Amino acid sequence: MPLYQMFCIASHFREYKHIKDLVTMSAMHVMNEGGVVRNIQFSGTQTLPQRMRRHKQYYTVGDYWTMHFDTSPRTLRTLAGMMRRDPRIIRWTMLKLGEKAEDVVTSPEQTVERHLPTSSSRTTSWSS
Image (tube, rainbow, N blue to C red; front, side, top):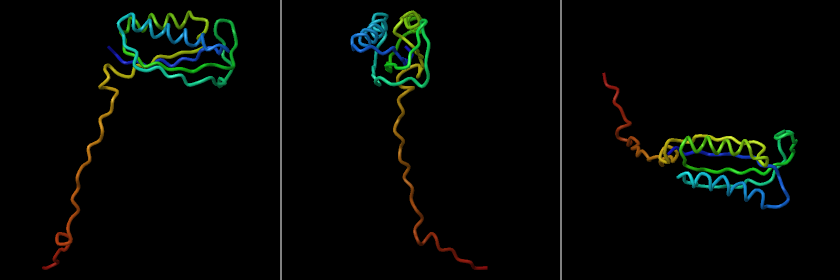
């Protein structure tokens, strides 16, 4: 299953319940379809860079959150449909990070051992 990242801006409510329900709904949809949710990160409430319009309303403040997950492309399409219909969502985007987790994880660089030339090898004779 491919690894995806969903970045989402939700409308801000005073109660934490709305964002919790939205994140839970998204994660449960992925898991119920056989996917794996790897990470959910809430980035906080921030002023939007510009006034945004969604579902005939204007927004100036939003709650930012991301979710990393593995799922099938079919489930990704149904999740996008849910985001499109949900009135709490202002903007979202989904990025494909890789086909499998090994594509995303970078291996540590191996140190190459270098031997500096010794003083005896540096001397050259200029004989004719």
